[in-house]
Amino acid sequence: MKDAAVIAVGVIGDTQVKSAFEARIVNRSTAISDARNKLEQELIAQLREISDQMNTLALNAAIEADRAGEAGKGFGVVANEISALAEVIPPLLETAQTTGVETVKSQLEQIDSQMKLLALNAAIEAARAGEAGRGFAVIASDIKTQAEKMQELLSMVP
Image (cartoon, rainbow, N blue to C red):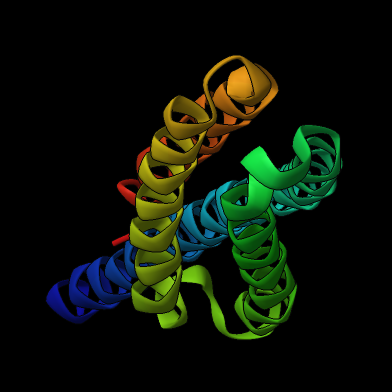
């Protein structure tokens, strides 16, 4: 009888230990999930800022194209491309909001590549326009900066 009581106490103790261990696992899993969600929301917010900045750059590029006149024809093309890219990002971020950033990572990487190409094209057009392209050179630099930020952010996505 005494042996049965010892075994019963051991089983009850094992069950309590098991329950406590399972509770810790659930708590840690929840904490990890919460941290991941918070990080993802911050990432989406920063990508949204890049999108907003691209819209501003598109507007500035259009202004510079008008200001440069005939010398700024190429600026207008680049301005339209910047604007088109800026329009593509928000729907992707809406998808990321519900399904996770990793589901749109490849599309965002393609946009990042296009942004880098646009920065190069903008720099070429600025150089071609000479003095009239000084403002566009700044825009080219800003596009490159935004592309670098996007690349850095995307490197955090699994």
